[in-house]
Length: 116
Image (tube, rainbow, N blue to C red; front, top):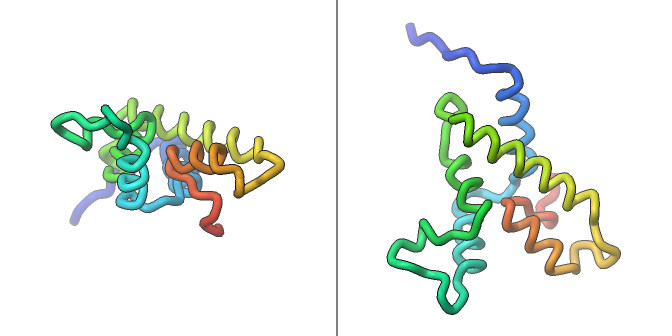
C-alpha cells in the first residue's frame, strides 16, 4: 500500500489559491510568454530560459506536483497570488479593454477573460 505524504496545511491552501488565480493553462502561458519575450534581442540559444520573469518561474511551478514543491516554489506561488490579487483589485476604468493591465495579469498566468 502506498502512503500519501502529508503536506503542511498552509502549502495546501497556497496550492489551491495559486491554481485558482493562475487560470491560464501552462502551454497557453508558455506561448504568451514567448510572444512577450519576442523582442528584437529577446531570444538567446535556449528560448525557454529567456522567458520573461516572473512568468517563467510560474510556468515551472505549474509543471510540478504538490509534493515536489521547494521553498522557492512556494514563495513564487505566494508572490503570484499577491500580485494577481493586487492587479485585479486595481482594475482600471477601461476594465478588460485596458491592454496594459490585462497583459500584466497575463504575464502572471491570469486571464481576466476566463470566467470562474
